[in-house]
Every structure is written in structure tokens, then in C-alpha cells.
Image (cartoon, rainbow, N blue to C red; front, side, top):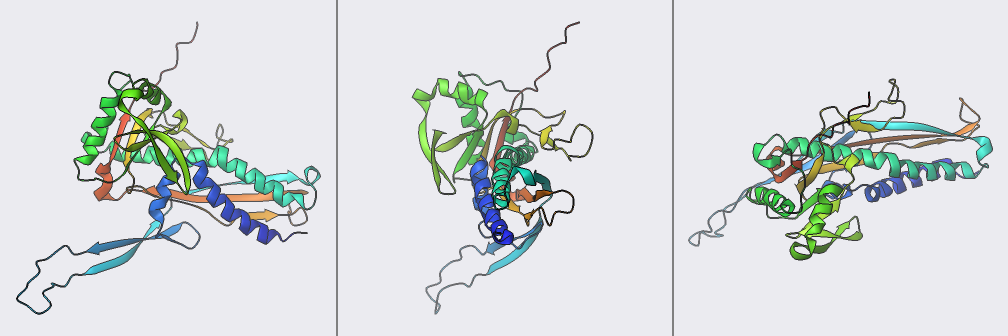
Length: 314
């Protein structure tokens, strides 16, 4: 029989690589390049402070004023601890195919369930940060082709006026994108946006790439189903009662500190599994997103009107 431990380690690495490509917010993980992770739900984030420029004195030997560099690590806790356990009956696979089948199933699970949840969590959290600052959000807007460009450019300007001159990234829902594309020939073209080595051509405005993002991820607040409570057995996430749609979200590329890591993945063959004559696969993932206080105003959100259900026929 193949070495299950070796297979599991291989799948852990591949699943971490796959999740970054499956998420529309995978670009945010690039900010965590220097983060130390040794398993579990804690990460250590490097924080560096450096003294500014001083006058050079020609009259003194050396002429330079000494400066200090301080590097320290801050421990952060990933609050999102999510998982699932899956079984595949022994009759559904042969002895050597069980590990492969679970690996394939976990990849599908990540793409259809895990990635959308992490995306929705990150975008809603960024929206909540922007909504704390009155100049960094606009609410109740219905996208229209005659003013959607102006609305986006106003958001860009708000962030630029904070002094941030780096790359901005825009997440936009499809209603807004549709109106945007109505005037695209005269105001915009495309740009190459690279995420984890994969290049994609996307719309842009003022050099800011626009990432099309589905409505289920573009909401201001979500609830995470626990998988146990009545009505939550299917797991996943859903909008809260107070959630409103996000038309577009503008974020400084260096602002979100986002991390997602698969915890120890476990695969048990039918002879080891004590609960059933079946292969058992346990999946557990930690993730979170943080925004440093001094970067909160480098996020801008434009939200729509909460959809109402049509009146029921009497």
C-alpha cells in the first residue's frame, strides 16, 4: 500500500497552492511573505521601524548621524478555525485509490466551498473597516453607466489623498461591472494582473486592476454556519440580516495582511478507521485577515441597497 503519510504531506502542499488560485482574494496573501508559521492558529508578523533622514554634517568626521532599526515580531491569532470530515466507502474505491480519491475530493471541496467562504470573509472584513470612516465609504448607490466611472474615481481619489501612491486593487460585482463596461471604450482598457505567478487580463481604471467578483462574496457581513445547529448542517456561510451588497471595494495592495494555512490533514485507510469500513479524510484550515490601524484609510467601499423579497401572493 502507498505510504499514506507521504501522500498526505504532498496533498497538504498542493492544497495550499490550489487555494490561492481558487480565491479571488489570493493576491492578498503576498503581503504575508515574511510571516512565520509553525502550525496551529498562531503566526508571527515582522514589524520594522526605522529612523528618518537626518542632516549630513560636512564639518564632522564621518558626517552621518546614526539611526536605529528595530525589528520585532508580533504574534497574531487566526480566529477562523474551520474543518470537515469526509468518508468514502471502501467499495467505492480500490485499496490504492482511496488516498487519490480523497485528495481529488478535497481539491473540489476547496474550490467550491472553502475558497468562496474565505473570499467572502476577507471582503466583508475589509468593507467593515472602511465603513468605520465616513470619508471611506458611500452607501445606497445603484450602479448606472452615466456615473459609475465617477464613483470609482472618487473612491480612488479618497485613498490617494491619504498619501498612498502604490498599487490599488478593485473588487467589483457584476452589476457594477456591467455598467462600467458600457462606457469602457472611452475610459478604460485592460491590464495584466498577476496572482501567484498566474497572469490574467482584466479591466482597469487609472492603472488599477478590476477583479470581477460574484455577488455571494460581495456582501458587508456574513455568518459562518457551524454545521451542527438546525438549518446550518450544510455548513458554509450566508449573509447576515443586516448585510448589504458591495458594489465595489478599492484596497491598497499592501494593506490586507491575509493568511490561510491548512492544518495537519489526516487520511485514514479502512483498517484504521474505527467508525466505518471506509476511507476517512479530515480537513482543517486556519485563516484570517488583519488591517493595521495606520492603513485603515487605504480602503474604500461603495455599497448598494439591501435586496427585499417580493411580496408573497395572498
